[in-house]
Length: 303
Image (cartoon, rainbow, N blue to C red; front, side, top):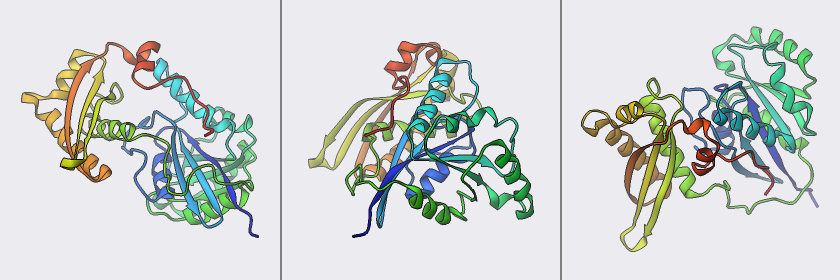
């Protein structure tokens, strides 16, 4: 009887190297939000891919970076915790701007994990192939990666080969999750992430990372094919609230409309979405506010 393999794969790296794009590529769906801004992912996002003979459980993590706020520190601790007990570690770097010496400190999570470490050179569609060998050599001297995989998370080039190798090194195990499950996050969480993504896209210059989103109400009315949702966008200052609302409320209306359309597609039903803005002064530096807004201290990934 053929053996079955199952395990956790942690995707690590600096902010904005394409971790969420690769995560979504593997899952074949938009699970993690993607924006052209660093530090978009704040939580550990779990996605489940079932293949013949195996279950691959991917962990998209916040970017490893130096940050002074309590929020930034918690994000990094979340990434570290996701790496600690993973079976496979994918350390992503950009082929367009490799920084081997600066990444020396970034590979620390790999040193304390028993997982199989792979280096993934992302964005190879943007560079000449002859430039990849020197980059591989620099990183191989930095850390003894088991293998190095050049890929493009956007086009999919090289990702099938990487996926096959991940399955090859996973331990024999029964599946951790039911076969029809694709994530362990709630619908409320995904709705809050969709709203936050629209805020980032609309206000990426004025309010880069001072927003959090909570869902106060999620009421299902199946007889009307309707879900009524109330969400709150939390910012740190009154000036940010004014920017989010916009003149005559037009900016907030645009954010709410874009979010509503995507939430309807996600839930497969009509949605009434009511979005408000609240000022939570200096919430990114306040431990109690972070706990309340959904950014607790790092959790273990185990089911």
